[in-house]
Amino acid sequence: MWIVNLALRRPYTFVVMALLILVLGTTAVVNMRTDIFPEIDIPVITVLWTYKGMETSEVESRITTYSEYAITSNVNNIRQVESQTLNGVGMIRIYFHPGTNIGAAMAQVTSVSQAIRAVMPPGVQPPIIVQFNASSVPILQIALSSKTMSEAEVYDYGLYILRTQLSVVQGLTMPTPSGGRERQIMVDIDPQALQAKGIDPQEVANAVNAFNLAAPTGVARIDTQEYPVSMNNTPQTVAAFNSIPIKLVNGSTVFMRDVAQVRDGANTQTTVVRKNGERGALVTLLKNGNASTLDIVGRVKEMLPAIKASAPKDLEIELLFDQSLFVTAAVEGVIHESLIAGLLTATMILLFLGSWRSTLIVAVSIPLSILSSIFLLFALGYSLNVMTLGGLALAVGILVDDATFTATSGLASRCGRRSWTGPCRSPDRRLFQR
Image 1 (spheres, one colour):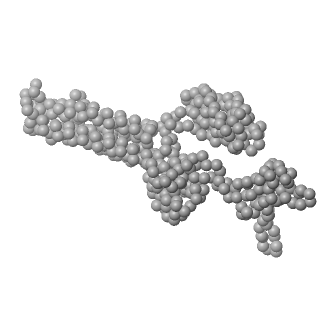
Image 2 (cartoon, rainbow, N blue to C red; image 1 turned 180 degrees about the vertical axis):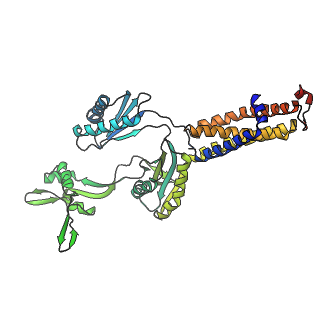
Image 3 (cartoon, one colour; image 1 turned 45 degrees about the horizontal axis):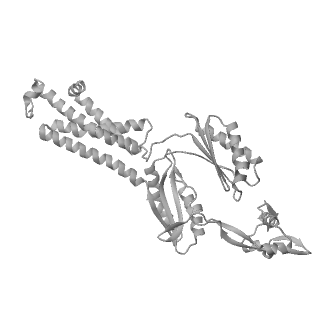
């Protein structure tokens, strides 16, 4: 009751505090990050090694096992290490103790992984090292399809053009597209022709590598002009690969077209994406842990008209999944329930107590309480997510009870004061005067 009496003695102080809460709370709502889940700092790092064509046992013995030994010997605060090896793929998941500086751990894992590449099989690709974050979830999916373009062309557009255009959005991560066909220049070897010429497949591979070099050439200075000099060491077309010399056999040169055929093909397709029965590609957009879902989705939607205008005419770009709708619905649900609770409580106070001052107390206290909670969450660095919104929704019921009690107590205090000259429209005034 002391706070009620204090509010009655210093009304202007509480009016200024209410206005301050309104301004700060509104500012926090506008600038606060809105997300699906709260940011969860899980100290887990994943190292992914790839070597296409190498069988599982070789990847395990030559890459995965050696990488595990090097990481556990040179990286600090490791709690547990798990690994999984497949054909051409080795994945190592490193769990750290709580409180570990994940940035320093990431730097150690990266330096160790780069150092051990020198003793691994030639041609192994640098590992992909990522930090696992539970709040990095898909927020958008963009479907690409075309009736005239091939799957490889649709895939290349999503990989090289669409991802580049959307990379300027802060807090957005985009893996490679799903579906489509990854373009590759294929060399189809004729085994019978190789045997007849006495050539093995390794010589064919060496010839392709030897005549497909990008070497610096420099410039030629003639008088006061400089002219770039280009070397004819890289085939400009796919058909030019068929003219690469392989070996001199019995005084005659064996060319690539004699033992193989080079064509513009694609890698073995492992995933298929269909949109309305037509094959295409699917680009999934992930959110980083510190970004706001609504901000990212809003920027992507703003860029979509310009992206569609610059895309090929026969390419269809469509949003299939939008996680921001769920977040927006959760925010609107809390606001809707708060308004309903406030209106019903204010109506009940007005009908049964007959005091417009008590009704005003209820109508003001509930939204101000929610705004003050949101401001405290914003000041502490938290975000509006499913967890915080659920807590606010549950707190609305408590706010209704507190507002009703505050309004009743305020009316009782005013009715019991001797200096009170206004009407006390209670069903039983004597109850408050006691």
